[in-house]
Amino acid sequence: MAVIHHTRLVPTKLELLASWLPSRPWYGGGAGEPELANAGGFRLDDPQGEVGIEFIVVTDARGPLPAAYLVPLTYRGAPLDGAGHALVGTMEHGVLGRRWVYDGCHDPVLLGQLPALIEGRAQAQDQNTTGTPAQNVTCAYAGESPLPMDFTTAATDTRETTELPTLNGTALRLHRVLRPTPEGSPLSPRGTTGHLAGSWHMPDGSRAAGLFATLHTGLRS
Image 1 (spheres, rainbow, N blue to C red):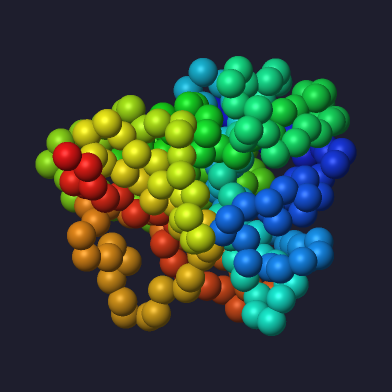
Image 2 (image 1 turned 90 degrees about the vertical axis):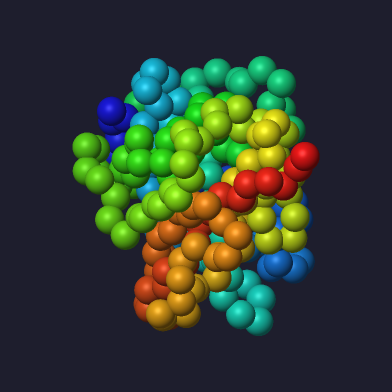
């Protein structure tokens, strides 16, 4: 179980993301530095207890309409070999020292735990309290066999998603740009075999809920 330390971070997570987000193809805030707020999310435990895993939802007040983004991050005590392209930045942690922060879609530890979460073999944890399950995070899996564990770190970004493929044609699509699901609509879209959903706070104080990820099969022969 990961222990959450309430300590000083230099720079903060939001400061790191304000520099990194505008370089992403799915960021729609235009020119200028984002105006970010932490709006929700959850953590996952690394079974080996070495890597911090966090899914952060941030809202950006820059632009004509508020936007919400899903940002999976991993925190490591040393650089991850071959993942320089996925480095968000480094920070100084008041307890743990220097931490290397990565886009979690390119980290094999996160890619091992995310399928386990959707399949029900892992538990989403609260962002801020050690040993407390996250509220308002739901998962569903309708497949007849266990999910494959060979999701590749060669993730592909589009204008709104990041696709995490496997060799057998299964793919997880992370919804980087979050859209509230209309009340009464099914969470799992047609053609999907599973999903991850959650909720977040909007800048006006309201709460929105929608899909964080969908599971697709048969995308490749």
